[in-house]
Length: 170
Image 1 (cartoon, one colour):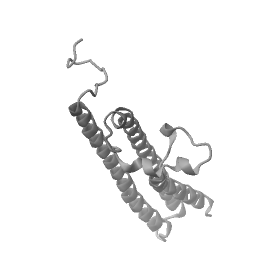
Image 2: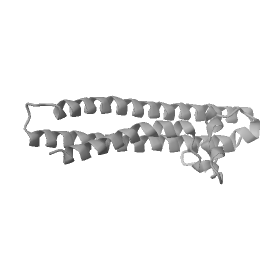
Image 3: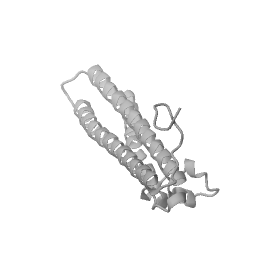
Image 4: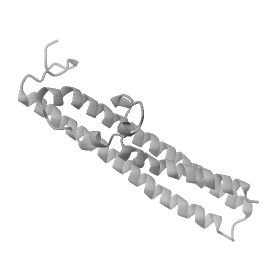
């Protein structure tokens, strides 16, 4: 199989400036795409959670519904909100894992060979330096990633508490 034919998955060689430059810009585009996915997932999760919390509060404080209707409705809303929080958390984590892989590949192929700057600034805020026994780079988590993952996790905890409150209310 010659170079350029479909199915040829040889790693590109960076013997000239052009190939490394193209790879650098392609990696930058992938990072922007994953960042955009994270932003979209956090945003739709916050919007959906807001609507669900308002619906939950409206039904919970309603005097026109029978107690069993309130319980069933609020449990359904809370379970849906909990599931949405978990799905959002998994989606955000998947995008963060893809970002880590892109960073690792760019660090391995670009920076050592041509001295390009870091593909993005994520390496500067690694939490590893604050932890004893620094874990390997691939498992490192940035402080920003922890903050982003806390948004859907906080919603999941809130829904769990609300499910408990609804079930324990006479």
